[in-house]
Amino acid sequence: MMLDLAGGFGEKGRTSLAVNSGDDRILLDVGIKVGASGAEYYPALNGSSDDIDAVFVSHAHEDHVGALSWLLSRGYSGPIFMTAETRAEAPATLAAYAEPEDFRRFPLPENRIELFEPGDTLTSGNFVVSTGRSGHVVGGVWFAVDDGTSRIAYSADVVPDSNVFVMDTIPHCDLLVLDASYGADPMPGAARAQEISEWVARHPQGCLLPTPLSGRSLELIAALPGSFAVHAGMRSSLEAQIGATASLLPGISEFLLARLRSAADWSDADPLPSLPLLANDGMGEAGPSSRLLPRAGDAGFPVLLTGHLPLGSPGDLMHKAGRADWIRMPTHPTLSGNVGIWEKAGRPPALGHSCAPDLLGDLKSHIPSLLTQCRTGQRITVGQGSAS
Image: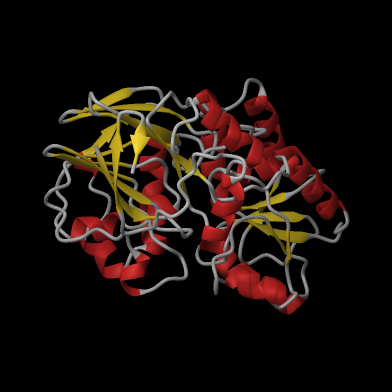
């Protein structure tokens, strides 16, 4: 089995991995890189897309699905495997992050979507693809790909210790592709959630919390200390996520639904509220937060950013200017989580995606089999029990 590292290796963004065995070739995720331009915005796939047999999408965040219209524009005509929740969210992601002309000509092709549920086993050619819940978003999954000789496990984005979502155990494998977004950060999610709760409590006059529409939004609702508001355009999606109880920890859906029902609706025409306000997306690149961040900055309205800030993004610029605070709400594995995933997978050779090279070096001191020199654009070979 051979892997083409098409995006997300030695960098954050455009996450994509091509798996090859004999005449079979599949693509796991097809994301874009926020803040990049030209070829670097898209996965590093050489030539046409005619040799790709199937695409498997882990979830609908832009760094995992945002280049799908681009891939279709390059001639990809095969099936696209995703969960129903990912299918529901992907069009909005593509509308925000695809090139407008690509999206106009190549929207999500509903007739080629192959739906599955987390936990299903899928096939493409000689590949058998296992799936499991990711703990990152409703309908999000990891993939384990077996060609009969070796198995690679691709985590996509996972959260093994979420306060909201369930993650299934990644199986033993010959190569593990880890979500290394936070490197060796040891701070557990519960501690970060408490920091965010305390920050919000110190701003009783109201504040803005930009957030992705899916995933972190539910984590923030669970962490907020009191009453809050949501942008009205988020409510139906949040309700649908809370209703997907198979992705959630036992009992949490009832708690979240009660919290959401008590939340105030806010729209763009309203004055800034005297409550914490959740508005998507998390970087200020798209959605209501792209309008709200400058408005909050002009009004001196407190802003708390809680996720990845790509270089040059509105959130990054606002934070660097001292006009927004930042506390990470973990929606990827911290150190203990990734060590646990690696140990349960049999301590195999490992790659880290969505991570800068220096952070990979920090993580290697805790995961000795981590291959830290692999970068986007490279090809590696996976043998029985080894990778090179």
